[in-house]
Length: 164
Length: 289
Image 1 (cartoon, each protein chain N blue to C red):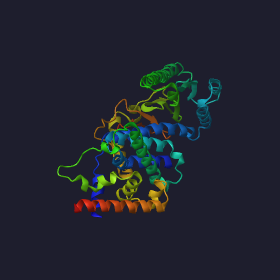
Image 2 (image 1 turned 30 degrees about the horizontal axis):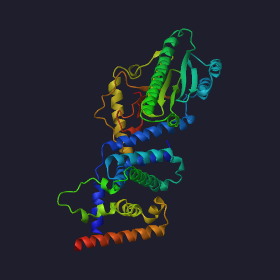
Image 3 (image 1 turned 180 degrees about the vertical axis):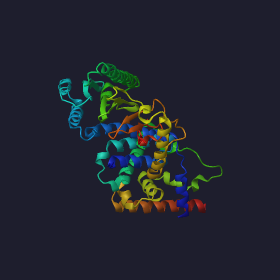
Image 4 (image 1 turned 180 degrees about the horizontal axis):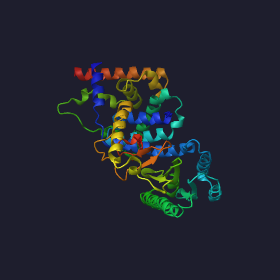
């Protein structure tokens, strides 16, 4: 039996669900929201599978939906809890004696949304800058500029912490 | 970049909750139902070679599945050979209210041979009862769901946007000169939890329902189980999917099966019975030794 694009999409989703969850969690920082984000993204992807023309683009196509859903979740939360800062939702999961300010991962997650997306997709998901440009609907040069600026900021901040 | 690889490690250490795969599968299943509806148009019917009249009849019946009762009644006049039974859409109705849509096609079997008349009544009664029970239960579930939806703050407009649909339909799995296999199915588009497929296998020569024992002999449970286990092993190698054979209790009287067009029984498992949901309802053909 010939496998259709739809079947391949479903298989891709099932196979890579853990990756999706990690990325979602890295934005929303709690299990319930991360589960919702992944579920919504899967639902939307399967509902709109017809808009996926090119199978080679399956991964970037899905991540576009996933990143959008993560952003939507963060935005909805911002609207809901005006008094609290969204970063307060982070789950304190540090080991004792762990220097939070020294933690690059936490730093990345506190950066501006687009910059953290670029860094996560580039270094954690190992995507090319071209793919990232497609996912975030940005021009390639913008992605590059934001990435280098972001990395510089991180290096500077870490440097300061270290020197202090 | 050592620090970045540490950060990546931290990212990869994000624990995966058990619930994730359930939630993902839920969506995949819901989509599968929607997708299945679209593809159903291309349904196929298997007919043994050389049975032209029957082939024509079966093809027509399938084409006529969603048409009116009048059409179904006319079909009964198609001539069919031998002692065969005929299948027709006994009753077909569709209704759409603001709350939900329901479409039901109840198949009927008609025995051609004189000696077997009378039997068809009990056959048909059972099939009709299954269709009716499923439709009634599904309507009840839809109404409960609607009530719960409205009680928890949903509006009528939002409910309508759900496009709840209930469907009962059938498929002729095969019709050979000896056997007739029908699959009668019920599904609801908002949940696959209640989807049900029931198989009816009929020996047209003997004029009776058939069991796996009739086909494979006294030792049917062992023969079938052995064959299934062997095929699972092979599939695990080829597809890389893991089957849950440890929990499988083996073949019994209630094991679902249908007869395929070459006259071999095909065992059908429920979704999740022996494999992850993505495998759907795994089928295993048991070649008659």
